Image (cartoon, rainbow, N blue to C red; front, side):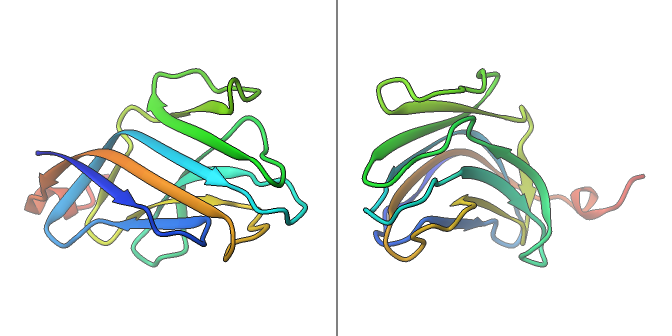
Amino acid sequence: MYRILTDLTADDSNKDFIVPAGRKHKIEWGFASLASTATVGNRQMVIELIDTDGTTVLVSASAGAVQAASLTNRYNFAPGSQRGAAFVANQIDIPILPNFMAIEGQRFRIRDSAAIAAAADDMLVTLGINDMSMTALDAVDLY
């Protein structure tokens, strides 16, 4: 089933989307808007797949340019897109794997990896996902 996930909470630059029990999620596309405060520093936006331990990064994709203070930029995450090296009209593309999938307990994390103003910058995130039931075989290590 296709679903839209959003986190529109202000005053942060780190969003986690945890896959619920019995489910697996495949990202079809993503969008983030980051309004940076006047705090000096270059923000580096990344999207990561985090394992069930909440810390181990399994896959990571980062923007090809950084965001300075006092700007609002938009980030598009999509399979097959070209990695942007600069913002065009305050927007940049970040390619993700075509099968960017997480199983129950794993999470997609979108964040400023530099954490310049982590409790003050405003990041809004929307993800388009394919939400599927997990089968017994999905949890089995086949290699």
